[in-house]
Amino acid sequence: MENCDCSDYFHLVLCYHECPTDPSPSLGGDCGCDAQPACSPGAIRERYTLQLIEDKLAPARTASALMELINGGTLSYAVLASYVANLTFDDPCPDCCIPLANIRVPDPGKPYDQNQNVDISVRPIVYTNDLLYEIILAIKQGPSSTSARKP
Image: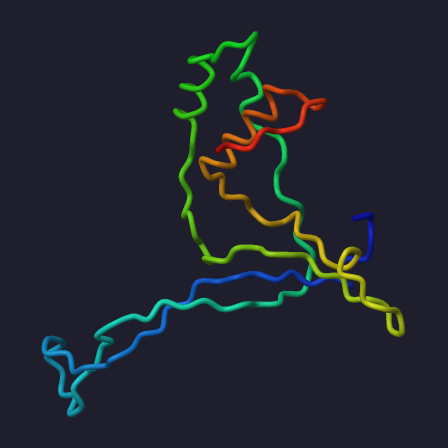
């Protein structure tokens, strides 16, 4: 998408949501004078929510951090070891939301066009074995060949 006023944008995210359920009296607790026994959830129901948030997200990263990993058809163990040794592990899910799309609000009176108003390039990709196989075949065969599907 071209440069624009980002106030015209929202982004849609899929978020993890825990719902405490089955409250039951807690048998342990403080030695206070509370007449009401404290309750705590006996189970947690895992759900999700869709949230529409004002603003536009940047597209997902498309360049590899391991550009020097493969050199002359061989794998550089030193580059891989250095990369793995320098990884930092932040909280993998600080808000537990996965971006799904940037959505541009169309101008009043103009028709809504999904191809122009919805940008899914912000979505993270989960690389399955089948997808990795297809990517390796595409790299091996080059741009002029058609990809042979895995049987």
